[in-house]
Amino acid sequence: MALEEFEKEHITEREKGISQMRSISNYGMGIFFTIAGFFFMFPTKYTARFLNNYDPALIKIFAVVCWIYGIFRMYRGYQKNYFND
Image (cartoon, rainbow, N blue to C red; front, side, top):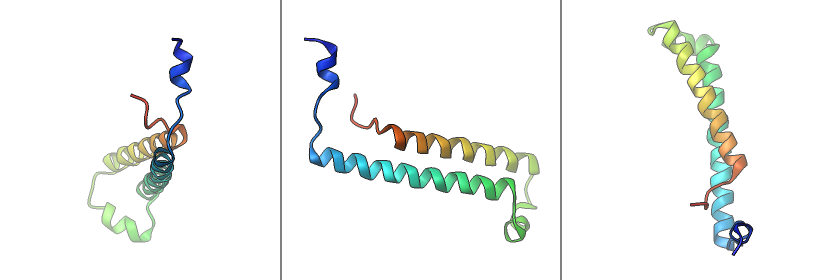
């Protein structure tokens, strides 16, 4: 049996629905974390009064971490690699 036969396994309708739901969830969380990173990196008047209590370097690092994690979540939603063991 060739390796290509295992790659062409058909997924059920239930697995398609789960895959679509997880993909949408990953896109949504990725967008949320990316936007949150922008709010931390470029604070508005409203968020600046909360962020002034913390170290600016740590806030910038946290913003970059939010961006990286947000991009990772969007990539994972694009990849849709949920049922491969």
